[in-house]
Every structure is written in structure tokens, then in C-alpha cells.
Image (cartoon, rainbow, N blue to C red; front, side, top):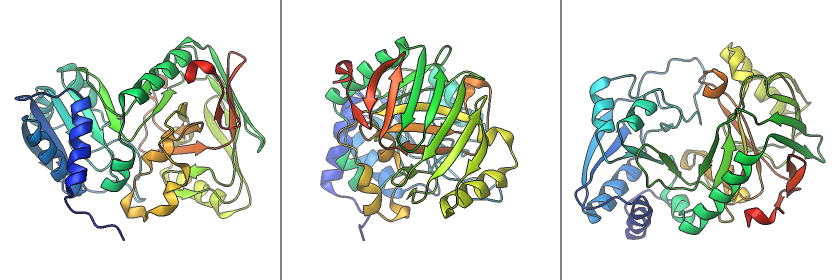
Amino acid sequence: MLIERIEGKWIDAFVDVFSLCQVARGDAVAILSETQSRSVLVQLSELALHRLGTRAFHIVLPTPPQRHPIPLRSTGTSLAIDGLQPVVAALAASTMVVDCTVEGMLHAPELKTILQGGARLMMISNEHPELLERTKPTPQLRERVLKGLAVLEAARQMRVTSDAGTDLMVDLQGAPARAAPGFVDQPGKVGYWPAGLVLCFPARGKVRGRVVLAPGDVNLTFKRYVETPVALTIEDDVVTKIEGSGVDTELLRSYYSAWNDPEAYAVSHVGWGMNPGARWDALAMYDRSQINGTEQRAFEGNFLFSTGANETAGRFTDCHFDFPMRNCSIELDGQLIIDHGRLVDPRLA
């Protein structure tokens, strides 16, 4: 069992990442956490920011009551602020917000206001520090991810296929693309660690086809590898059928249906991983309580298929699934960029 305590090497890792974020001596940096946050991440953030000479301060909120009858995991939508305006104002007035909330602020309703105030937000994923140490971002990773973003932004159509039976069509027109290099150094922007991927949020009615989760693919909400095939039929963005004979199928059907929310079944985002330092197999090495699974979103060559909230399509739900899939092929406007899980487009080198 890995112990969670302050280690000098982990302070060094946090200093390195915050240095990439370009925080400077005297900057006002808010450390946002909640009562159920992983305390070692809060402490490491404080110590690293102190070493960099910033004027760091804490905002700690009570973890809100559970409002659903089912466990809420891997949503990227912290509910801790709950619209509390003095908190939003303090965060917006900061140079940078270090987000140590349990679920993270990526899809939180307050994020837009915080960024409009000029702050940048750096989310530390709810992971054991050893994992963060292994997956530190680099300037080289950012350059690679930005190349991927340029390729995605220029495309009009995505097709994803696999030997397992996936055949998905995505109309990319009107789909804002995002790059996640693992750090943020500009006001009004967001970064998160670990990262190293590109993705987009398709507009309403732009996704159709079939996604087949094969053994070895990852269900990040459940933090487990898929063991038996699951076939998802997507019509007008929405998963209309969940087919299969194994426990993976039964778990998905049960969890989706428990929400009693049609928007839970709709596509959130699609994209691919570009981080050669992120590992598909690392999920097997940790207890579930030690990880959030963010590393698996970024491993090189995966196709990331997600359902849940999609602001571009005007859909909002607390149910979210991320499925990093191996051995898929991705074409953009007919040009092969990923071949059976391998990056082959020279523009992405």
C-alpha cells in the first residue's frame, strides 16, 4: 500500500508544474478544496507555492450533501461552491486557482465566471502523488498536443472504426476543440494534471453509429477494465441500445437507468490521447481509492469516447462516463491519423 505523506520529491514535482504555469513571486494564488479533498494534494500545493514565493491562500468548503441515490464519480463537475458568490469573487480575483476539489471544476457552473475575472485554473486530479510524479507535463508535450489541436480544428468529419465492431461518424462542424497539455499559463484558461490529449464537444445531432467497448478498454467512472464486449448504438447523439451478455453490460445498464435522465445517455466529447508517458496498464497497479483514472484518458493512441454533459449541444447532466478505447482507427476527413491505436499522421509527431 502506498502511503500518502509529504515527500520532498513530490514538492519538487508540484514546483515544476506550477513553474510551467508561470506563477510568479507575489501572485495571489487560491487553493480551492473541500472537506473530502485528498489532503496531501492540498498540502503539496501550499508548500510548492510557498517555495515559488506566491501569496497562496486557502478556500475550503464543506463537501455538499449527496443529492443522488447513486454514487457520483468522475464527473469533472464539483458541486462544492454551489453558487456561493463571495467564493466565486475571490477565485475570480486571483492570479491562479489551484483546484483540489474531489471532482474538479472542469464542468462546474461557476467556472465561466471565475475565468472571466482573469484567473486561470489549474486542476490537480484526485490521484495519489506518485501517479502525478510519473505524469508530470512538459513543454514538449504541450507542443505535441497543440499540433493535435490544429489537426482537429481543421477537420470537418471524424470516423472511428475498430476490429471489435466500432463504426462511429462525428460531424465536427460547430464542435469546439480543446487541448489539454497538463498545465496552464494564460489568464482565463484551464489546465489539469495529468493530461496530454485533444478532444471536442460535438454540436447537437452530429454523432451516429456504433461503439463497441472491447476487453481491455477502460470504464473510468467504474475505474475498471472492460472484460466482456459492450455494444452501444448511437442515434442522433444518444445511446439507444446497450447490448452484451457480461457484467460490464449489466453495470452500464443499471447505472445509466438509475439516473432516470435521458441526457445521461448523450455524447459529451470525443478525442484521442497523445501522451507517451501515460500508461494504459497503470490502472491495475493502484487501489481504486488512490486514483481518479485521468492518466488513462491521455495514453497515446486511445480513442476517448464520453457521454454526459455537453454545453455545445445544450445538455447538462451529472452522469458522466469516459471510455478510453484501445486499438481504434481514427480518420479525419478521410485521412488516417490513428491506425489501430498507433499515431501515424506525421503532423502529430
